[in-house]
Structure formats: C-alpha cells, structure tokens
Image 1 (cartoon, one colour):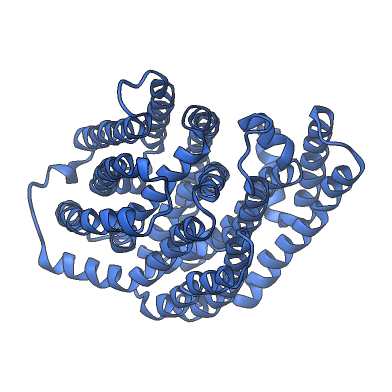
Image 2: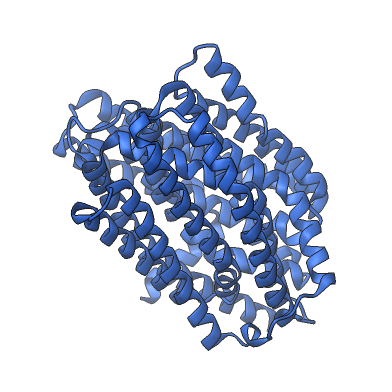
Length: 508
C-alpha cells in the first residue's frame, strides 16, 4: 500500500509538473514580450523610475514575506497531518494578512514619499508621477498580500490546473496593459501602475472564487485562533531573517544601483529581473509540484521518501536550469537585441543577465532543501545562520560600490554569498532532519558539478569560433541541448531514474 501511495504521489507530481510547465512557457513568452513593449513605449528612463519606486514598496516584503511563508507551510502541513485543523488555520491566515496589509499601508506611504522627495535620483519634473506610481504600487502589493492564503491553499491541495490558468490570466492581463499604455489618456507611467493594480485586483477575485467553490476550509467563517497565530508568528519571526535578507539582497541592490548609477541602471536591473523571473519559473514549475509532497511526507513521518524527493528535486532543478541557462548565457548579446531591438538594450543588461543565471544555478541546488527546512517548523538556528549570511549582501555591495566598483558587483557578491549559504544549509539540515551530507555530496553535488562543468565545453567552443547570428544561435541551441542531455543521462541520473525514464518511454 505504501508503494502504491508513493506511485500515486509520483504520478500527481508528474501531472502537476506538466501543467506548470505549460503555464511557465506561456508566461515566459508573455512576460518577455511585455517587457519589450514596455521598454519601447515608456523608454529606459521611465522604466527605471518605475523599477526604483516599485523597489521601495517591495522592500516591505521584509515584513510580509516571512508570514506568507508561514501560511504556506502551515496550510500544507495541516493537509499532510492526521489531525487536521485546516479551517481555523486558513481563517487565521486570512485575518493575519489583512492586519499586515494595514501595517504596510501605514508604513509604506510616509517612507515611500520621503524616499522619492529626498533620496531618489530622477528628473524634477517626474517627481509628481513617481508619487502616483507609489500609490498604485502600494495598492498592488496589498492586494497580492491578501491573496497569499488562497494561493497557498490551491498549491497545498495540488490543484495546479487552477494555479496555472489563473497565473496565465494574470500574465495576459499585464500584456494587455502594456499595449493599453500606447493609448493612455493620462501620464503613461501613472497609467501603467494603475492598470497593474487593476490586474492584481482581478487576479485576487479569481483566486478567491475558485477556493470558495472547491475548498471547504474557506467556508470556516471569520475565526482568529490565538494559538495558531502564535505558532505562525513564532515561525514567521525567525523566518523574517531569511525572507528579509533575500529582499534586501534583491531590492536593496536595486536601490543602490539608483543611488550610484541612476535610473538607466535600474532599467537594466528591471529587464534582467524579467529574464531571472522567466528562467526561475522554468525550475520552480517543477519544485512547486514537488514541494507539497516534501512537507506532507515530513508531516506523515515518512523521512526516507522526503529525502528521496530532496535529492531528486535538487538534481532535476539543476538539469532543467542548465538546459535553459547555457544557451542564454552564450548567446545573450544576440538574444537581447532580438528581444528589445538592436541599439535599445540598456547598458549592463547583457552582463547582468549572464551573471544572474550563474547565481540562479547556485541557488537552485538548495530549493528542495529550503522546503524541507520550513517543513520542520523549528527554524530558529537555521535562519540565524543562513539568514545572517545573506544579510552580508547589502553592506558588502555598498562598501564595494562606494569604493568605485562597477554595477555588476552586486551579482558577484550574491553568487559568493550563495555558496556560503549552501555550505551552511548542509550543516544545519544535518542537525534538523538528519540529512546525510556525505550522501548528498556524492549523489547530488558531485553529479551537478561534473555535468555543469562538462556541459560548458560545447557552447563555449561555439561562441569562440562563430559570429553571433541566427545560424550560431541555432547551432548552439541544438548542440548544447543534445550534449547536455547525453551528459545528464550518463552522469547526472542514477540507475533507478534511468530505469524509470526508459520504462515510461517504452510504455508509451
């Protein structure tokens, strides 16, 4: 029976992964095309202003991100445990997010206005527009904050069909906004921010409607359980270090770019972030499908199945990322010209894209390990160590940029700190879930380094020998994918995984 349950879980993961990859592919195309349209219509200066203002608001996810992670963990854990109290957990989560939304509004309004008026680098005649952008960006942020329990409930129930379709609806809405800017009756930058807030509101209604129709816990009524809130708040309090350090690393770096290099650097960061998000979705489409099973297996006490998911999830995350990242890294100049138009690519964009993909490959090793850590609920020591290391990003960035370092320094620092965090995660998870570190190094990390290193040879050789163009892109893409797949098959997969794939192919 246990094997039958695991087999059903595997089929569910595979089915959900397919749905999420369909979502990812559409959203990637829509997102990249949307960025091209926005750059054309707004220009890099206006785009840089929006990026910097949005970065100010997003900094407040330092306060909210940890509680959002707590809500996701508690809802998923309740579904996997034998004694479920899901209705109270969900209702308490909704109440908590409403409280956090009110706090964000009270703090973000004065802080954002002060930053725009006193610290932000922008033309004087755009201050008024920037203040309006701030208002609509706060509104969007608050709406997304209130949506967190509903989003988490859908993922915890593994209803990835709904999650995929609602996400696609949101992406198409943002594409429609990009085209609508062309006929805006008011200031284009303000109109863009206002329409994004409207898309967020419609998406929130879609999540709420689906949950109300399909999940009983959303009908639990207005409840606020102090005990559940206390456990969530304790979890979120320690997770605040990790979540906050991630926000400071990403959006704090964006604000430093504005301070040292102006709005054009923010435009390059914004466009790089679009690529980062698109490629990251390629990997998280798989981990989103597997993460609920990691948490549920921990809740059910099935440690061996949890470890199997962690190991395979880490390896497959790297293989999926490698297949996308290498062709982009070695053809980044030609691809950005195709994407944004020759001569329209902001300075540093190509280098930023290459560096952020390297950083992503380092981080992807740990995706499933982070899920396992959060599943335990006992995260204090982990967050003090790993979150503390991540906090090093911002002060190191500031010191180096102040000393005259180039803009891309923020990505070099992020990659270096990510390696330290990986080492710290292995150390902490050995204590938390008895993770066999030696086995992980042999079965996961050694395979990943071997394949990633050997897979570099083909695209690097092609990039050195051929001039950029359509022919080179096609040759590089085909050669890189074939050589990488061969390396993954022989060196990246273990015997059981090769047997599973062979069986699946033959059965079809």
